[in-house]
Structure formats: C-alpha cells, structure tokens
Image (cartoon, rainbow, N blue to C red; front, side, top):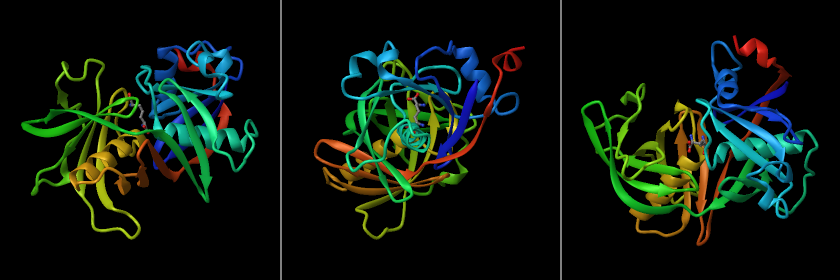
Length: 281
Ligand SMILES: N[C@@H](CCC[C@H](N)C(=O)O)C(=O)O
C-alpha cells in the first residue's frame, strides 16, 4: 500500500491514494496505521478516492472529482477535517491529480463540498459558517468550564478559560467529560485564552484541543473555525478575521456572512510503502 505523510500545523495524516475505491479500509487498519509506535503514526487517515467511486461521495461527484474519506486515529469516521482538507488539496496538487488554477478547487467531504485555494505557501479552505447552537460544559479533573457548542460540519465545544487559569498547564492527557445529551456523537473540545493583538486580525486566540477519536492534537482546523466564531461573537461581531495560535503554529480564520475560510501551512513530508499484514499481527 502506497502512502504519503503530511501535516497542517502539526495535525498529521497518513494519506492513502485509492482513486478507484479498491482499498479495504477498516477501523482496525486505520488505527494500526495511526499507531505512533507500531505503525506510521498520525492523528488521522485521508483516503484520496474519486467521489464517484465512494458511496458517500457519489452524490457530490457532479460538483467535485475527489472525495476526502477522513478517519480519526481510533478508526472512527468524522464528517469534516479542516486541516485534513488543506493537506488533501496539497496532495492533489503536488501529485498532479488536480491542476493549479485561479478557480477554487472543490473537494467533496461528508459535510458537503468545500473549496480550496493556494495562498503563497499556505492552503486555504472555505467551509460552512460555524453555527453556535447551545451552551454546555466540559469537566477536566475537578474543573468544570462553561462553553459554547458549535457545528462546523463536525461538533465542537469551545471553552474559554477563566482569568487566572493557565492554558499550557491544562492536563489534556484524558478526555474532558461532556454532556452526552448535547453531544450524542461525541465532540471535539477546544480550550482557549486571549492572545495579544495581531496586525490585520480582529481577534487573536490561543487554543488547545482534545479531539474526538484522536485525543490531544497539535492543531484542529474546524476547531480553530469554531474558536474564531466564538471570539467574534464575544467581541460583538458577526464577521471578521481571527488569528488562532495552536501548539503546532498559526491558523487564520475568516468568518464571512455565509462561510468560513481556514488558512495555514499544509506540508507533505514523506512517501513510502506499508504492508497491512505487517501492521496486523
Ligand atoms: N483535526 C481535524 C478534525 C478531525 C475530526 C475530529 N476529530 C472529529 O471527530 O470531528 C480538523 O483539522 O478539523
């Protein structure tokens, strides 16, 4: 099996080219590939498959040639992955599966079609506008934090830390406890603190994330979009630009009237061959 390894602000992926949807990708194989000691190691898998050849992509084949079949490291599926979409587009362009053009490149996902463009060394992806829909809480150890539930195609809970709590000191070694009635399918939880003003941005937020299906990661693109939307709401704004600093770097989130752009670096670092048999004892 041929693979490429890539990342966006340290959110890393094993990319599997499978244009015709021939690969028997299972939760067990995904978890084995993502294992950081016994496999290649990653936060998730991106299968690159023609939309027409994937049961969940076929309906979108008229709008996008490629379907991003995204899997979390534990072998679960997710609707959307913002950094994954940016890395996916980098892969399509670098391998010649898509041509660079001035027009935005459409990619089909479980959350619908997203559109991407290259901005210098960065890849920007336009996703749906985050929908803030509820108040809830996350409990970490003995600490319960208030947060806002946000739908970015996948579910998020954004919890700003009260003054006096140190973001780097949070222990994200275990999953935060959340309200299963609000998040029946689980949730990605973002913890935030205010950042110093950044030129050209309406807001600046520092973020750490505990991802559903992948534990703590160095970055989460949809999470950054959720965080950006909450920061704008808290500043009394509907639209604007927010710089979101994650442990893996900086993402720029631009919330417009009807969509959300996520921009940042997307890098391919290695290619190789892996044998499913070796991964599966
Ligand atoms: N890291 C991703 C989000 C991946 C999916 C998430 N863990 C979920 O289960 O919803 C991103 O960059 O958005």
